Image 1 (cartoon, rainbow, N blue to C red):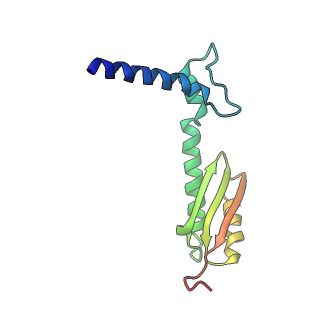
Image 2: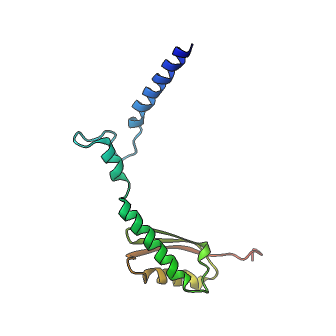
Image 3: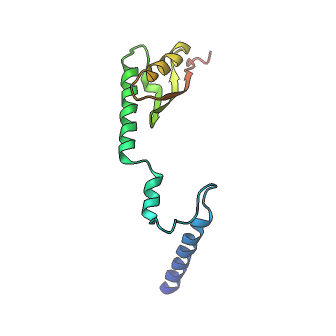
Length: 127
């Protein structure tokens, strides 16, 4: 009985491994190039560690720059930094702060572009 279950598990694993290449995303190749090991493919898909560190450092710098302005609540603002491109999302208290936060982010050294997805927070009363 256990040998049948083991064989079934082995067959299921082989089927899963074979079908994983068949469902690749459009624009991606399902096979590994002949001269490149599979580990290199996986590493090239993720950004290098230094790039991720630089993105995190830039994100912290933008947060620090916004934090210097006490009238802006940075707690509801999310910042994503990728190779100098910064995306702002979340809410601010009033409409004037939407552009103000974007201008602050643009002034941080290392920021090449800013995508502003900030919205104005609605009051709790629903008015």
